Image (tube, rainbow, N blue to C red; front, side):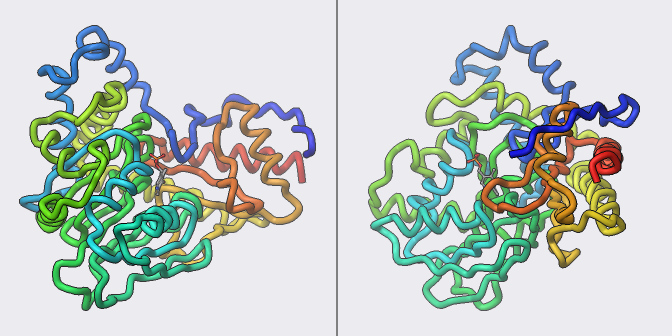
Length: 376
Ligand SMILES: *Cc1c(COP(=O)(O)O)cnc(C)c1O
């Protein structure tokens, strides 16, 4: 491992905020100020009382508006983040057999959870190489199609749509952890759109949140009525009952809840999902156009239609040591642009989430140019 060259970036080149990580990701300073201003009557108070229940209600209603959920969809939440939601869905949403699109680290994990479950059949897995995504294929007997809106490990996004010819009643379950609130969505195409708030919602980790369609809710109730054994903390029926009362089954992370509500409110005040997605579009155009034009950089995802507007992955020429570049940037307060460790490429990965200022993404490209000018 080479040592990091001592390079100080000029102040006027630096982004105003140096947080470009894909999760936990940048939390807006205004939201943190609001949290500390409200701390005295919010943090450290009972989640069974009005102040916290009101926040849960605000989050549920705000997300329904942000995601334009059709009538009958409900927002449910619980503790543990997306990884725990995979277990929740393994118990409460997959009836018999699921199909999974695997095109990176995160999209592969749900299939692993299902495969290990003794109460479910062997899942179908359709894979694509990192940098690409497969499409779902209607398959008799599959009752849950499991997609990923944005594969955070590779920077590939796909449009969640119901597969043509799927069995009637089959559900579409979408991991939207790094997409929800940043990428456009037609919610009528999905039955469970689930995520955690430490990415586009500019909050902290620890919660899972799921928008469930009436068909998904019916599935949860049917599996519950059939008596499938489910640990209470993973029981989507119990989570649904609690969410309807603006509560969680056990104590939620209150600061996480608060910051998520702040972000949803900020996006809604500024025009809703179109505002957020528009900011991500601008950041994406900035970084991909820069890389396309660069002698030493190339967008990792070759098909422009599959390039994520919330997570950019940029490959570098062999003359550049991207790890060293990331280390120099880190020394200058530009954080977490290292590549996803398991992808193992000579690459930078940059979050373009709505809270991240598109002007800061432009500043980041100028900082990279400056460092490359000295190193190469
Ligand atoms: C971050 C991420 C996860 C994991 O979320 P946790 O809350 O840490 O469990 C899952 N899926 C995707 C697509 C992610 O980006």
